[in-house]
Each structure stands twice: as structure tokens, then as C-alpha cells.
Length: 195
Length: 195
Image 1 (cartoon, each protein chain N blue to C red):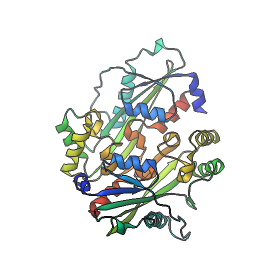
Image 2: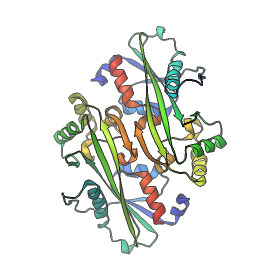
Image 3: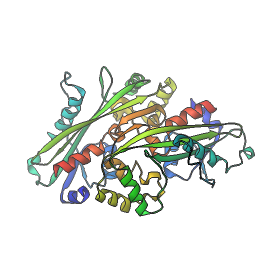
Image 4: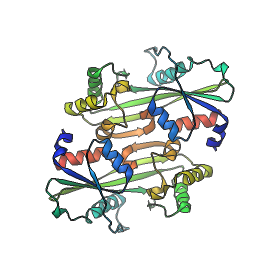
């Protein structure tokens, strides 16, 4: 079983996201958190799936993997929120968060997470797409959420596991945990391939 | 906003499920927990959607609503797991949990939650269906999950928010919180209609 095999490895989650750390814990995978600051700009001509994969790879470049033993695993991720016309990043303030939620209200969007799993010797990258459908949100509901939950650190200005996810989302199609920032099943399958 | 209107009500969640209580808390709805023991047998000829609705209504019959003021709201739910051929209840022991997970492995099933919202004067019942697709689970994975997590209190012998939900489920279609036992968005809309 993968859980037993992973005991021979030291695993680093390269992410500041407490949600990703919580999900990796739920997978019963022991790990340490590592952060790496890199330039997250990307070619705006790339299709969204490639943007998410590219950004997960870029986060790995901040680490000199050759300095670690072979039984080290690094996990990097990047989650983006995509409407028909644009990629929504993290809002810079409350006003931008309100605008983003107005954009998402009453329609479907896609959440894409790129995942890279790497050892000092190899690396594997993939992604998952989940469709998310928001009901029409009233101005009062958007206002309440932004004031109470301050979703400034979240792509698309919402957390699916927060109030707005409970009362505003009618349906999703795909992996729920992908929307939280870590497609756990994909990561599980990638780790199986890797070791 | 509904949150403000609900301040004029006393709300009871009639359920022993800590997961439902956690979700109602996530909805920012203040409530008290109440339990009512009733006979949960049902007509096996009923279609599954009606079984879930009926069981949510039956749970309400354990309470004498006429003894409460008009601004009291009772919420009852019942969640069932349905394959092509049968309704899976809660497993009676570890061996039955293993058999249920073998049944769910490598295929899609439906999770249906019936919800009833009632005041002393009126009641409203509805349900939500979510499709859940499990990847093929190895005997070791099933064994590990049943030993570590003891899913005896869960319909279908799994918790979507636990290890097996993270590493075994490829995709869902519909409400994630419905699979956890409370279709939060449906409840939100029902409360809006009710008050």
C-alpha cells in the first residue's frame, strides 16, 4: 500500500496554503511544509490548463533539488479560476473581491489545479479541472461574505469550504478537493506512479 | 438577508450527526441540536428519492411541534446511498463495511438526502441527488480504511470527507455537502421559502 511505501520518503509540500496542508493530512501522508518564492508571471497566450501546470512547475524552480537525498518528494500546486473570458487571480482588495464574485454569480466557471510531484531525479506534472456552478448571488450576500470572510488570499475571491460555498454553489462536476486547492485523488495516483 | 431574518427564530437541528452540525455552523446559522428516536423502517417499493424524503419526514413525527412558539424551525434530514440495485444503510460491523465498499469500488452510485424544514404551522420537504464515482479500491485500501476509520455510523460505509474520499473518489456531480449529509444550498433555499 502506498501509505507504507511513503514511509521511506521525506515529503515536502511546497505551499503556504493551510487548506492544502489540511488535505494532505487527511490523506494520511506525513509531510513538512516548505516555501519558495518565485516569479509567478506567465505567458497570457497559454491555455488555462497549461498555465496551472506551468505555475506548479515554476514553484519547483525555487528549490535546489540536487541537494536532497533521492528519497525526497516535493509537491507543488497552483490553482486558478477560469471564466469564459479570463483567469481570475487573487483579488487585491475588497472591492476587487466583490467584482470577482459578481462575475461568478449565476454562472458556471472552471477551477484548474496544476500539480507537480518531483524527486531529485524525476518530475511529473498533471492537472484536474472541476466545473463549479454558482447560483445568482444577491449584492447583500456578496457584501456579507467579503466583509465576514475577507477572501483576499483566494483565487476567484471565494473558498468553497466557507459560507459562500455552502449557500451559493448549486453543483460541481469533478473533484471537490480540487476546488479547495489540492486534487487529492490525482496526487494519490501521481505518487503511485512516482515511487 | 436570510441570516438577519433567521435571528428572529429558534432553530433546532434534529440530528445526531456531528457532520450536519458542522455544516449548519458553516452556514452561519445559529441552532440547537435535538434528537428524536423514531422507527426508520420504510416501504421497500418506494423509489429512493421518496425513501429519503419520507425518512426526513418521519424524524419530525417524534416531536410535538404544537408545543413550540410559531417562530421555531425544525430541520430533519436523511441520507441514503443508492447503487443500481439496492439502498445501502449503515453497516452493522466491519465485515459488512468491507462488503459495501467492495460494492461501491470502481463504479458510480448516488447519494440522496431528504430534507424537511418545519415550523409549528407548516412543513416543506425536498431532496438532492449527487452522483459519486469511486475508482477501483484495492483490498488493502478497503482494509486500511475500515480498520483506521471504522465507518460503522455512515450510510454506504464511507465518509466523503475522510481518507477514502480523498484518495478513492475520482469525481462527483452535484452538491458535495449533500454527500456529507446536508445539502446546504438546498436547505438555504428552503429556509428562504419558509420565512
